[in-house]
Every structure is written in structure tokens, then in C-alpha cells.
Image (tube, rainbow, N blue to C red):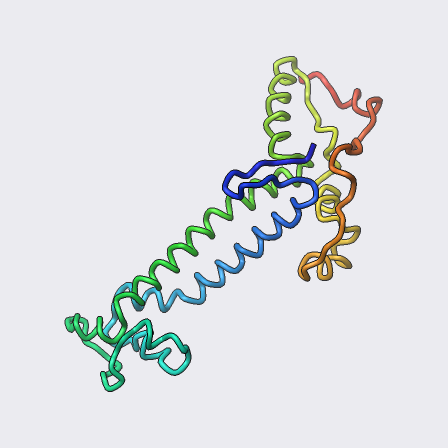
Length: 213
């Protein structure tokens, strides 16, 4: 049974939505990378409070309709403030704007790190033809086989390439990558999520269960 419960989503990720969940992780991670990379200079300016930098509020005055509402500054104030002129910097940039920029950067950076772990862990089990529950089951089974000097092989592992094709529901990476992965699409995955084909038959499995020398 291909099913995983995610408490922080308050729902189960299973056969019919696992692909959407994983692609959402990928796209969200890329978006956060874009945010972190795009605002790095703005973050450094507001974190270090350099005197020669044009404040965010002054730069965005005529570009964002809500800039004046956030900043609350007078239009005749100079665009440059000396570092020791704390009151001037607060009036021009706005303390709330500085906090928002710092919070946005750190939150995006934290999401990048957190999602990277999720992407790696799910990518690993997908490459091995497993679910998160099967990963621990196979790990325990492999240890039991090792104690008997035998090698355990996952009967549902078709190799990383076929496993990814089955997971994404595509036949060809080059032909289907753009129209089924990059572009949002709705199509049924392979199978029903209850019964799964074996990568090899029992007769083919027995020669692979070898005694370790």
C-alpha cells in the first residue's frame, strides 16, 4: 500500500497524489532559492545598514502602491543617511520594512534547507522503488538477512530509471518532461496503488539470495 501520513499537512500522501507532493517540493524549493538569491543584496543592505545605500522605501516609492503605507516617510528627506543618524534611517527605511526584509530572507533560507532534506529523502526512496514505510521495513529485513549471511533484494526495485518513470507516470523523459512535469498536468498514475508488479519472479530471485563469503 503506497501511503504516507504527513502530520504537518494533516493528510495522507498516497499513490494518486505522491507525484504532486514531490513536484510541489521541487517547485517551492526553486522559488525559495530565487527569493534568497534575488534579495541577497537587499538583505545585506538592511542587515549591515550601509550609509551609501538607497533605502528600500525610497527606491520603491513609485513602484509599489503600498510602499508609502509601510514606510511612513516624508518625500523631501535625503535618499542617503549616515550610519550614525539612526533617526534618519528609521524615518526613511522604516523599522517595520527592515524587519520584514530580514524575516523574509531567513524564512526563505530555512525553507530551502528544510525542503532540501525532504527532496533528498523522498528522492532516495523513489529511486529505490520504496515508500517511507517500506524503507524502514526493508532496512530491518536487510539486517536480518545479513545476520544469516544473505543479501536481501527489494522485489519492487526496477532500477532508478524505471522507478522514476513509474513514479512520474511517463514513458520517455525527453518527450514527456516538458508537457507532463514542467507544465501543470492532471493524469492518472500507473496502477491502482494496491497491487504492484514484481521486478523479478521467485525463480529469478533465488539465485540472487547468495551467501556472503
